[in-house]
Image 1 (tube, one colour):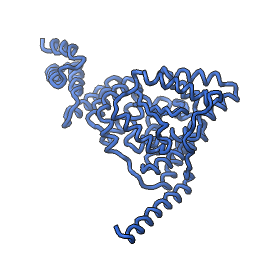
Image 2: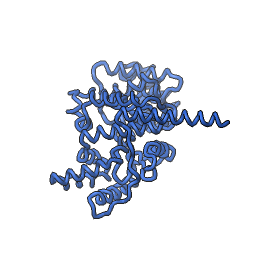
Image 3: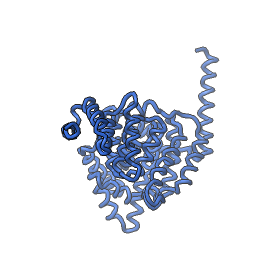
Image 4: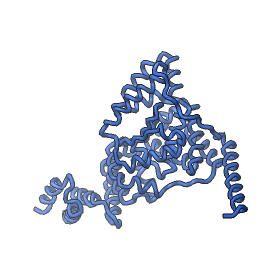
Length: 387
């Protein structure tokens, strides 16, 4: 490259950097992250909080719910590092097998990412939107402010008691509620998260989609008012307001990638386990919204269609059996059918008195999955149907 080309390239880079800065300033997201945090004195309230989180992190490491797949954890950690930049050495990502939408980051750098979140986001940029939001809370030390606020309201004991339950994992929602950030903190974390996404090369427009998709699930519950049915929405800015704000920010921070292929590649082999967990939640209306959205977008369509059939079958409302059978048949007719789709067809055919169809489907299921956990159970059905 000659001198003129070098100068031209340098000028282009400067112009791009200036454009990013102008866009960021227009969006109110021109943000200078603080330098890495030193460990606070244990005698301070912040130091005490760090010590508690260190104990909970040790408990978390021993939990059977923590996924230890090196490739998946490294993938999530790498996204955190792209977003956290200078703070990368202080962020430790844990993927926790829990079928709820959540990620949180403790003041000592412990980042938890729940599999219910990984199941719901559609691409890497959407995951980065949630992680960037949590890193925004961390960079601004919002949890420390919340602790001090609780102390001023004589609620310190309650908050610390909730944090003591974090290691149990099943009580994490209690801690999350006790340490729920105020709406101004949430708005600030949204703005910072968007800026971090943009700096890392992600499409900021994906952040609003995360919120919109989650809102559709919550609305599917009976009652339908997100502020009444989900504490997450009660402590965040009103859903339409938040979505509009995120969309406006995205307009001022254009460009970036979504990372569809990378996300699909890293998560594909876990989908069956995560979908099993989702169905076991028993929140069928929400699950149907989630599964239908993924089917419409073409994500693992065969598997999603099968599990939508499972949700219909388990819900058992009027017309659900026919809907379940249609989904099972669609999944079974695909190029890479889930073996369990044939089990579903067989079970419904048996209920409907269609013996030959049931025998054919259940036999095909055992041919595809001879070591299935329920193989012996299915064989008793076959013996009954052929006797």
